[in-house]
Each structure stands twice: as structure tokens, then as C-alpha cells.
Image (cartoon, rainbow, N blue to C red; front, top):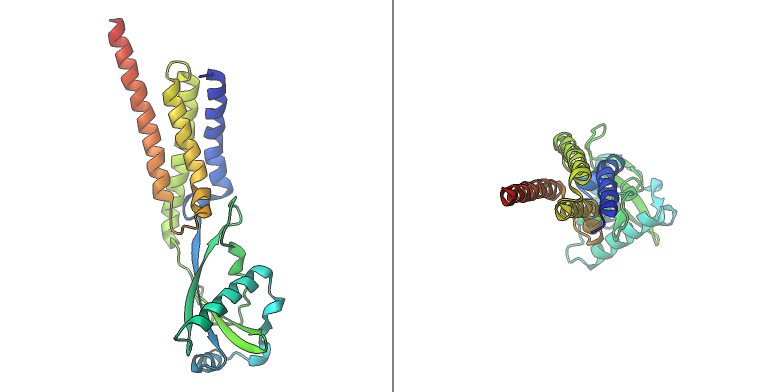
Length: 247
């Protein structure tokens, strides 16, 4: 194994870990988010009740064709689900997977879909966590789309984000130190530690590519801990064996 090539690769991974977190921290915490919506047709009592409760004016309907393409696609899927459902006399709830703009792959929707539905009314006007209503018109018919507020990690992110950042920084420093000190005497330990760093870098993008949803920070932390402990332990055991064989 070429020690110089191993050193370059290890130092590159050690630098990319904290740098990639600073560029897109959400990727290492919750790469995808499930956005929840509800839709109803103008022929339903749910539509009329919401219009009355929120002071929406039917004349303010936005034509779906005027929305950005991503919002048009999302609406079309919602409406198709609504029309296929057996209980389309009221609200029909649906969900779509949204991935951040910083992701390398996105088989679902990008994160702009939430902001591209007009906020014509609020369930709780003035509330920071209120669901919003969009009055839309398609093929001469009116629909209401309710965008449900997503809580995500909430205040938990204030704990998780610094913890993951600390993890990638410490791992990067440890990897760099191992590569500089042990690339020639313990190349496989350095290679293994570098490999785990690459897995951590790739994990969020693979997660998104598979269309999975939910948090990944616990996988990231476990991988970082396993890589650090495993490589350190391997070097320690190997060093002790070498000392014993010499004596």
C-alpha cells in the first residue's frame, strides 16, 4: 500500500468531514423530510367550511399552471390520490418526501416545494407554527391545499447539530493524526479509518437516493465512534505485539 497515496486520501477525508458539515449540516442530521399536505374539492362541505372559517375569497384562487413546475407536479399527485380515494367527500391527507438543495441526488422533491404553494390563509393567523391554506384552480375547478406545519427535530437540533459537528471535527483530527503518524507502520488501520470516513460522507446521499426518510445522525455518530475506537484499538494491540516480539 502506497503510504503517500494513503496519506493524501486520509487527509482529504479528514478535511472534507467538517467542511461538508459546515456547507450542509442538515444532511448529517435529517437528509430528507416528510412534508404533509391535505387536499379537498370545492364540492365538499370541508371546502365551504374552511372558506368561511379563514375568510378566503374564491376569487383569489391561483391557477395551478401559474405555479412553479415542482409545485404543479406535487399538486397533480395530490389531486390524483384524492380522486382515487374512496373517502373524497372531505379532506384527503397525503405526504411527499423532500430533500435539500445540497443533496447530490434527489428522487423526490426539492425543499422549495413548501414555499411555492401560496399562503392564502392560516389555520391560526399570526401563529409561527400554523398550517397554511392555498386556494388553487385547475381545469375550471377549485381546490384547497393545506400545508401542514412540520416540527422535525425542533429544539432537539440545538443539541444534535453541535454533537455531530464535534464528532466530525474530532474524527477528522484523529484521522489526520493517525495518517501522519502510522501510515507506514499501521496502514490497514489508517485505511479502515479513512474508509469509515468515506462511508460517513456518502451516507446522507445514499439515504436520499434510496428515498428513505427520517434522521441519520445516530448512524453517523455510531460510525464515527466505531472508526475511532476500532483503529485506535488495532494500533494499540499491534504495537503491544511488536514490543513483545522484540523482547
